[in-house]
Image (cartoon, rainbow, N blue to C red; front, top):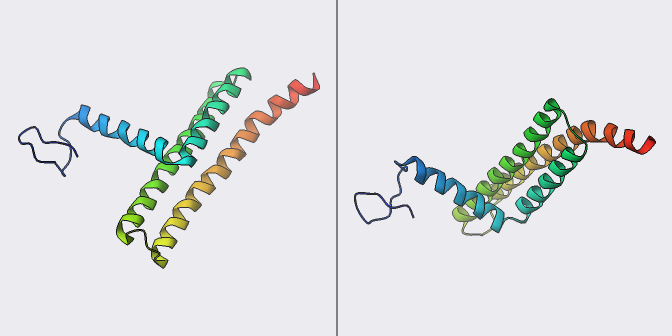
Length: 135
């Protein structure tokens, strides 16, 4: 737990130090990567897409769309993880119909973002790959 600079008790309030806030955020990214298989899959796919984008020499606007999709996917996976963990904490890992609903809707947001990302990727990459294949 974060420590307040004035005492040695764990702090549950907001961090008053920008560097601490950044450290906590980086810790959150590391935790999501370490604990969530789907986050590792999304990160792996992001690296592949970036490599493909470099190979196919995307223009600035294509990179903007690809970057938007990558960041939306990662953010949605983090938000999904938040909901899953909060539901698990509140229900003590026991089934609850409302908890299932929350988890399902959060997963749906990830799925919709993934479908959007695949659509954008297809619009950008398929014509470039097709041009390479016919020449």
